[in-house]
Image 1: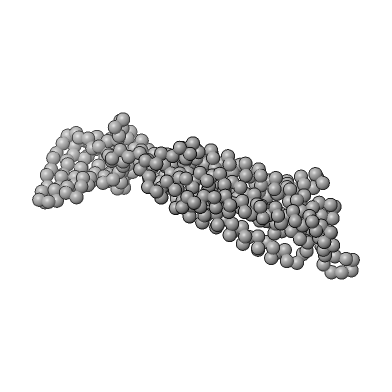
Image 2 (image 1 turned 90 degrees about the horizontal axis):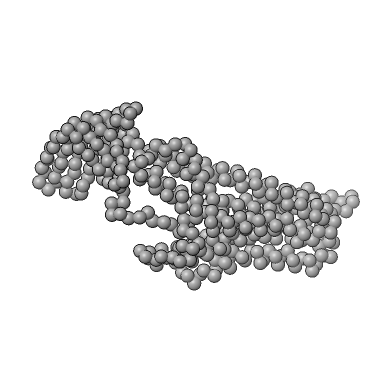
Length: 378
């Protein structure tokens, strides 16, 4: 009996690894396309691009693993039913729970991995992803003023460079600055260089002019200079700190939430994130129970198995939709927090009932037309 359980467990494990790997590659490819423009404009290396997109993957794995588990359990058990393997195992004395045991054990492994992902790995990796993305977009140490292009380096400042030399000089510089609705400035220089310090980035210009235009009196003022400095203001003009989303907060930060500057809706999103991390890892076992209770309950026949698979897929889709819907609703109404756990655990409880109750009627199941009589077509 243990050999049969190990055989089934290995079939499920290998299938899960293949399906999860394939889905992860597809998700990585689709998500990485969103950041191609950011990498090109910021001049980051290919290694940084791979690292940046790789930091997103733990967040998607929390969804990919349960869905992959459901898919491989449904496929494996359906194949074993059609090949009569489960019929033989049941005839050898394996009951409902014995047949479901390998899938349940693998589901518990995914539940443990889900807790590790949601409580530690995802907040850490997503925080690094957001920080690196912010740094790549706004930190001037990574910004390359591309030649022949109008570069929007910060709010209200556009810089054009005709050519960049190998030693870092900028030739043919033009910068346009919108101070406010009342006046604007246009800088022109023969050459210059991008310089960084603790206060930010600036362009040192040589042999140029600064034209200031005032909108109210339509006055143009021109100042010629041999050397001047143009400060590139950072995007956070008021010294604001980057907003940290609920997904990048640690569990301790969510438990001891600082509500300063958050409205009621914002507080609800942070609170529901805590309950999502505690409840949703159990969705892996919920998906497994949906597949098991539909496929291996009752007699095994070659007829109607496709209908069972279709019903299992519909139930799984409804389960996933219900979990997402209750999250959105609970973020606006704290009274719905218990419903997050109720919806997540409901398929587990119902699946156990479906799998355990037939043990009271094993005689009836054993007499079901699972194996055709000799001379009688299946």
